[in-house]
Image (tube, rainbow, N blue to C red; front, side, top):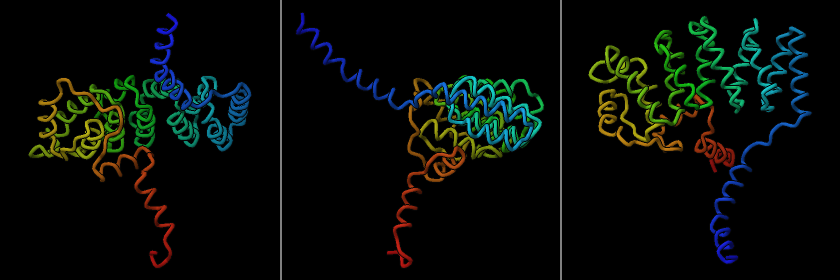
Length: 270
């Protein structure tokens, strides 16, 4: 019996180790002192009514991933100062916490004027997309073309491209049928947003059918049954990779490596 128990423990040990490794990658939760300091700084900044101080406090709170802190950061979404609104949107974009996404979704749903704002609408949609969560599909796909400004529609489409779920592909195909390859394009070559459709679909599927909306729809009709979205970002065509990583602020290892090589060369290229 003891021998069987030892064998079982040995068999399970790789899974235990893998779980421990996954947990070790998670950032440690903020300490009580860090949370209190961030809350105090934010509350004091809001009381001052000085936008510069509020922005500084919001920026300083980005790394403190706690519900109390996120709630105060989200208060900046309703501030009269556009500078404070922008700081709050950007902070919530990068705060990897479900409450940050919830605050952004709530703000979008409640603030009807935001949908017509050609500056803040794409920023909020992009911030929502950064979280890459399927729970945001309803918001991202609600009346997509009500504000046809390219930056707004682009933010929706590329946000869908971050949600690695078959439903996101279905949604993109439906939208492309309505706008990308219908009235908006000729010969199946898409419309004004076809570059964005191509980028989002290539990122999700690992295929690149260019700007041909008809080719994308035919491919999906042939392949959607049983298709599984690759869990990781696939290898991308270079132009798509540059645009995608540039839009989302992702590190480009190739260009970073090239910069390192360039710095290592002298004026004569040696």
